[in-house]
Image 1: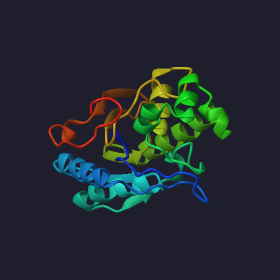
Image 2: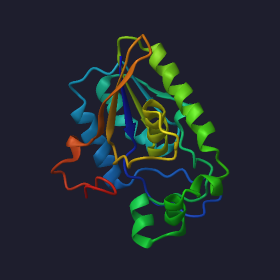
Image 3: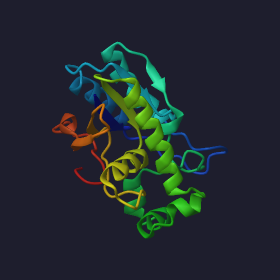
Image 4: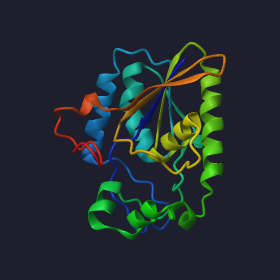
Length: 207
């Protein structure tokens, strides 16, 4: 089967919410999500899963509509900071040299949130592998988050650090071929051709 891990589109900034920050998409994010849906319109997706967080669900909505399927919410691919009261897009963190950006650079961000990155990766991996097992011979999209994508790909690559080895752009597609034998092959990383020439933000790298 072919698995498409897709990062959500650009969300709005939320600071010090009364409960967990769960931002909706920014206007540019909605445009990104529509371009994603158009780009994948000629590929048959048998199922579209999404993290239950708003930015992932709203990104998945145009894609599921174009494919004629219902979104399947999946708790196991929610982001590790889902209970944090603040969400600031990473581009803004970097531009402001925000303390959270420094924590990401020095590897203490997960500690500050009380998250064990290895436990998080184990949850993500088990969830993704369950989805793979349920869709033999099919093509499935999972709309999720940068941390989730990094967790699963570091598992596939056998890397010890699950906190992240690269930056997934907004609505980027990461394709994995999953064989019944258990073999997993990474086909593409950071596929964002659908944003080329749109003038929309791509992410930390690429505009």
